[in-house]
Amino acid sequence: MAALSGFLRSKLFSWQQLGLFHSGCRLLAGDKELLVKLRKKTGYSFINCKKALEKFNNDAKQAETWLHQQAQKEGWNKATKLQGRKTAEGLVGLLQEGNTAVMVEVNCETDFVARNVKFQQLVQQAALCTLRHCRSGEQRQASYSKGSLPGVELLQMKTDESFLKDVLAMTIGKLGENMLMRRAAWAMVSSDMFFGWYMHGALQADQPSLANMSFGKYGSLVVCRKTETSSTSNITELGRRLGQHVVGMNPLSVGSIEDESAGDAETRMLAQPFLLEPSLTVGQYLQPHGVEVLDFVRFECGEETQSSEAGPSQ
Image (cartoon, rainbow, N blue to C red; front, side, top):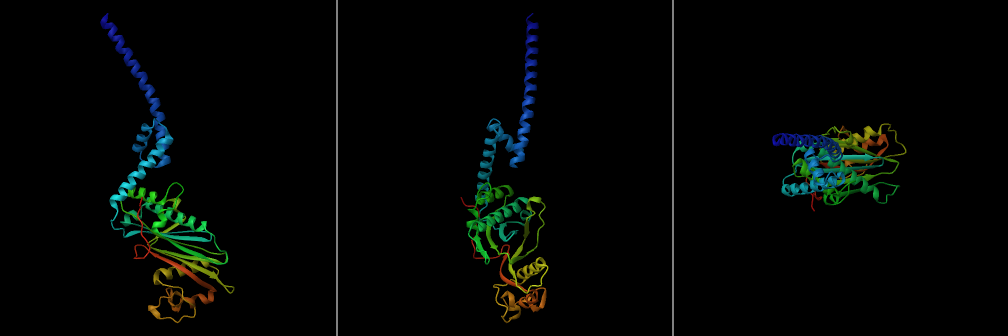
């Protein structure tokens, strides 16, 4: 009798276990759905998302906040450890929207990381912050405006979700290389003007979210104006040619169309032999097109400049 009683008790315990197991399966299925949603929303690993959900008893909102905080903390720790390592590679990024265009330079240690989508997204964030900055001030419509920003100022700008310095630190944490926010430049033009630009060593972005960006190792932005006698129909191609000249010949100033050329030693753009037609100066090339060059910006990734370089600083 005692043996029968023990057998029944063991069976009852087994059935209870089985019931709990099935209940647990249902719970795990719900957990998995929540886990997938959190992973998709935040981009963090399944292991970290699972840990966050367990920590906050499946409260997705608290779990998401904690994940961001941990990523930021880990990114800053990694950034501090890597600080001081040489950053000779990177990308120049160019973004144009309507009458505004910006160029930024962000540096990293290797060309391999420069080709990583996460690094390119960092460059894009820097460009978007610069675009927002230049549009926030008062602009004169009668002419064009132009400005530049050192890396230390870029880091203090806010993206849609956090400060750029935090985005930089988290990217360092994810990719494991030291990075620097180097510099930015922007220009805004009136309706009678247009931009010419060119990227040398252009890098094709694979992600649709980066389609509005152009990346390369050298970049130029040229502010142009059509005169009343302009006969140019394809300003995009003309602008690209002028951008090529700025990248290839590295002028130091615009100069004047009346300037006499000093040949290969010339540093004034309009007096330089035109890169694509060396028998003409840039000024002579532009005259029949009815186009004036008002200003330009040239970035060479990793070049020595007097502008500030900036890594993430808390």
